[in-house]
Length: 204
Image (tube, rainbow, N blue to C red):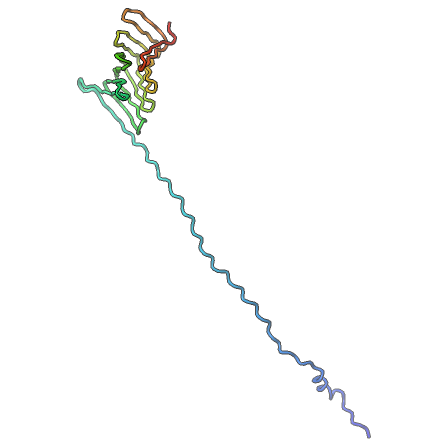
């Protein structure tokens, strides 16, 4: 009796079922941790603006004009402590000032009396003169004629007073004549108002 043979392909479903490995359920990979968002940038404080410099006020120009009225002259007096240094009298004055120690004045026909040691005096006249505040000087120009209290006369092109040294400088064609008529000529006359000392340079 022949055994019934089962065709191999009839066993195929059972072979497949027996050989097939059970499949694991696919699991999703753990999701990556969310990337933390960067915190919002804090606004930087704006740099404080540099303080604006306070503009320096421009000096105010002051103009002075004065003229002789009748017998009333323009007067300027200079003193050091209790000592009178000079008194200036003029027909007119024209000055400009911009603040402390910045002015100058121009004088017409100045007559200046300089006070030296003791009773010494020098009275000088010139067509024009200038006083400068910064260096405290007076310059008489246009030909100076002067005389001293003891009778000497002085002629020079210019005469300058220096407040820093209390010196008088007669410059240019200087001629000094004594009361007896003796003449002394030179390039420059220097007179120290504090000591009373007087000398010449370029005497001839």
